Length: 142
Image (cartoon, rainbow, N blue to C red; front, side):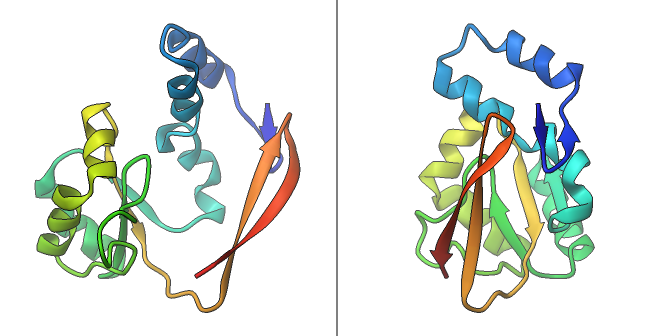
């Protein structure tokens, strides 16, 4: 499988086969976990730190320039103000604890992902891939 000219290797296919006993939605979601794609796409995406413990939050915030976006498998958009930049360890912990989406993800084994927060004005584009081809680009107003 190739996305943006990057071919996913044997490890990704092996991971897929290991998860076949799970529901098809879970299998689909696991293929897009950050562990599968971040290393290959790190040169063309925002700086990202994956953490496993709350004690790592403060260091990660510093490494990412002092402002971060919080997510697990999904974002924290279910928390008022959740999609805004977080500057402190306490703000990040508060979002993690208040977001039912992130709590559900953590119960399923997801890790906390802190991404460099970049202020964007205007619009965001999202690309959709089907059978290794870009099939659609949608416009997501900010």
